[in-house]
Image 1 (tube, rainbow, N blue to C red):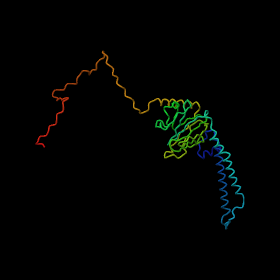
Image 2 (cartoon, rainbow, N blue to C red):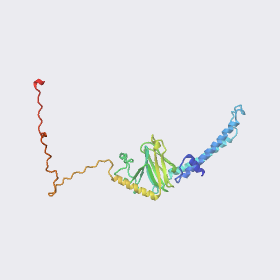
Image 3 (cartoon, one colour):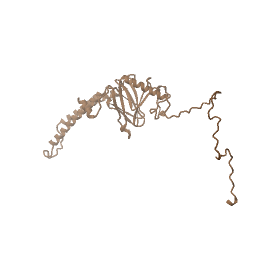
Image 4 (spheres, helix red, strand yellow):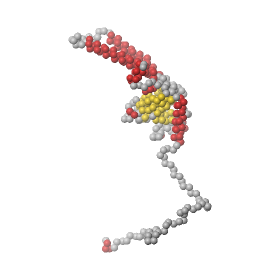
Length: 315
């Protein structure tokens, strides 16, 4: 096992699955080896000082300080190495990630909308255009507020918790949030970005391995932060096209189908005239059974009798 794999395993990082991830891993590897060397060096120097300047050998304090220039050279070397690491590796890599985005026609653009406590993904349909979103249309069945009257959004794909992307194709994720600050973190892709309400922050990566990876929120966002996780599925181009077609069909069917729980109009009775030769109902023209002898009959449609006034003796 290589030293890089050992460090990744020690840090608990999953194997790299993006085209730029090896650069991140090499910077982490160099930093840890450098910090390990500094730890050993300063620990050895600390032990040397404890022994060399112990009280038995140095009964009186020396206020002149160090007269040798070794410590100055060591400190200058540490600063030089850190400057090379920062200016030669970290800043160029950061500049490439934020300034050199792939062309939009070659990349897959995904809108990632975070909320407590899940990630929503909005992808364009076969027409390649995003539908208009408006906060006035947000509901439980429409978490992103897609405008149902916009033709461009009829075939859009909206998923929650799971995102599919094709392998070996750049992915541009445009991050935003509906409530508080979140962080869209893909450990296997070595990429992360804050999702801030009112802002659209793009990040990009290129997956190089098929498989299923974890998506987590890297920013404390509330009591349910620990459960704000998702799944990134990297498919082959054929599997991705099949998934895209399936989701587009489901999206179109959901838009044309009536909403669940909506009241349905009751069917109107048909008043068709009976044909001359049609048989009459069996109970038509028949009266109810005659009362048996001795059964008192209740008077029908009898007007109510006025209440009797009390006699003078009852008052």
